[in-house]
Length: 223
Ligand SMILES: Cc1cc2nc3c(=O)[nH]c(=O)nc-3n(C[C@H](O)[C@H](O)[C@H](O)COP(=O)(O)O)c2cc1C
Image (cartoon, rainbow, N blue to C red; front, top):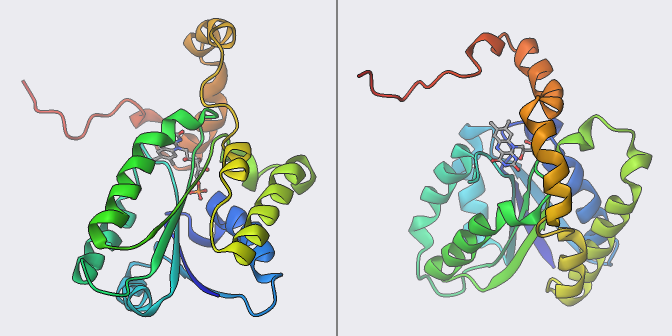
């Protein structure tokens, strides 16, 4: 099987999506005769080339981080280029990977539903969507801390490389908790209020000289 892969992370090669794809595709390509080609959608000038590859692909995987409960804008821009293939015969089989910062898989489910509907509207046989939360730390943590996740991605890639489908049992293992039990949220709520979980994001905002604008509302109508 030849798999055409689009990485929809605005961080491109340096992001968590790329790390996950590396493990997934290592498993996929461990099956003889399986190959993949990869496009990075943060290189917007490559979108026409990626759309052209979509048009001749047998199977496509589009991977992305969850951004404000939705897809990143550059993924949406790429989807608009796929309209030319809507309803065409022999469209590629289409699957997705959505990974998020929040740990509960439930955050990604509305986007998953949208993506399934998109495959249907395009007329692409839907392979499924891999969902995983708690991924923001992947690019900063030592690899051994995430070895179980990486081994699971490798296994999913291998299984997909053999069968051409996503095994629902593996998908559910990957997704982890759908929602935390009430006892966990009860403990977390006061911690959230005092900003315990903000330090990592605050550091990034400061690094990007954006900390002072963290409550900005650029689209708010002035009253
Ligand atoms: C602008 C922005 C918006 C985000 N919005 C969400 C969100 O709504 N829900 C969530 O769980 N994670 C959110 N995240 C976290 C990302 O999904 C997470 O960090 C992901 O691992 C980033 O992947 P990448 O490094 O491949 O871009 C957001 C991150 C950024 C930078």
